Length: 130
Image (cartoon, rainbow, N blue to C red; front, side):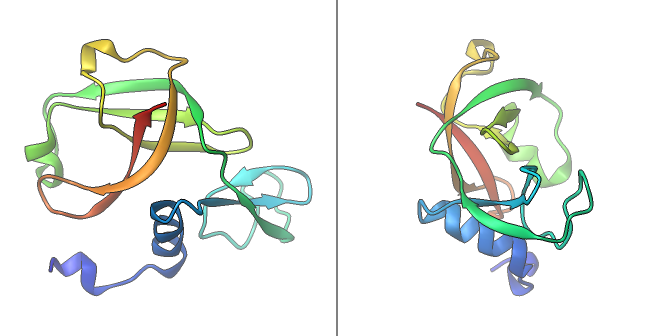
């Protein structure tokens, strides 16, 4: 067990648990802005009336980057693709796992899941082609 597994970030880890169980959610304010937990206030408008909404099953890659020289926490994962995907009211950032870096394109449809890093074994969001 790594040191980071000894401390639980309830809002964030609860969201990862839900995504791993195919019950992903995001927080939506009364003005329709979406954000990821943990939040107490909408980052767009300051609204405190937040409700859990189901995360769509798929999204589209908006942008991505390929990392060849990684930080120490991701050394064994390199090269890897980090992408931002639009899931309707919310955008997620994660590693794209099942696509060769040279085959990634914006607009690709992806689903989201939780896996671990090769280097540290810590959990992270990952995207997989749909």
